Image 1: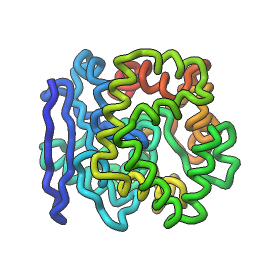
Image 2: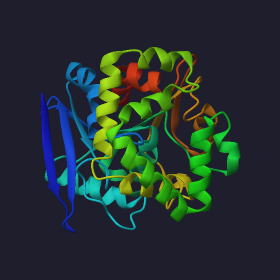
Image 3: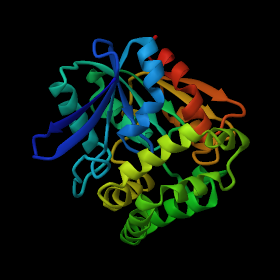
Image 4: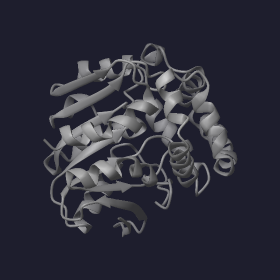
Length: 288
C-alpha cells in the first residue's frame, strides 16, 4: 500500500511525502538520491512490509511535488523533517540516507539528534576535499561537482538546462548511468522493472524543471553548513567497493570523520546494485 502526504510547512511551502509499509510500524525516513524523488523508496517497499516498518520518503525542496526553497542549505532540511514528523505523529525515527541523501541524513544527526534513533548511509556522498575525494568517480560526475564547487551560478545554469531536457528523456539518464558502469550495476540496469522505477523517479524529481536539482548540486559540492564532528547519533555505513558514482574513498573519509560508525564494505557491489539489492539488510540492520 502507498499513501501520499502533502504537508503544509510553517513558511507556506508544501512538502510531498510517500508512505510505504506498515502504518503502525517503527518509522524510518528514506532520503532519496540525486537526482531522485520520493518514488525511489519503492525499492524498499517489500522489505519495509516484511520487517513491519513505516517508511516515509519525502521529496526535498524543488524535487517532485515539494516546493522550491530559495537560498536553502543542507541543514535547513532538518526543520522540514521535524515538521513532517510532528504532523505525522512521529516522535523518534531512524533515517536511511541514500547516495545524495546521505549528507541530509548526517545534517539531521547533527542538528536534531534527539529525534533520531540511528542513521544508515547507503552509497552516501561525503564532503568534497579537493579532487582527492572524487578519485575513482566517473568523469562527468567529477566535472559537474568541480564546476559546482568553483562557479555555483554557472553550474546551476548548466544543470537547470540539462535537467529540463532530461525530464522528458529519462532514458538518457539511464544511458549515462550505463557508461562505464561496473558489472554489478549493468546487471541491475538490465532489469526492466528497475529501469522503469529509476526512470519514473528521475522524471518525478524534475517535475518542476531543473531549479531544485541545480541548487542541490552546489550544496553537495561546496563546504557543508554543519560539521561531521557534531554527529553523535550511531551511524551504519554501507558501501559497494566497485562503486564509481560515489567511490569508496568517500566512505573511508566519512568513517575517519565520524566517531560512532559501523561499516559494511561490500566487494563487487556498485552504486546502483547496492541500492537495488541491499536495502533489505540495510533496513533490518538499521532497526535491530
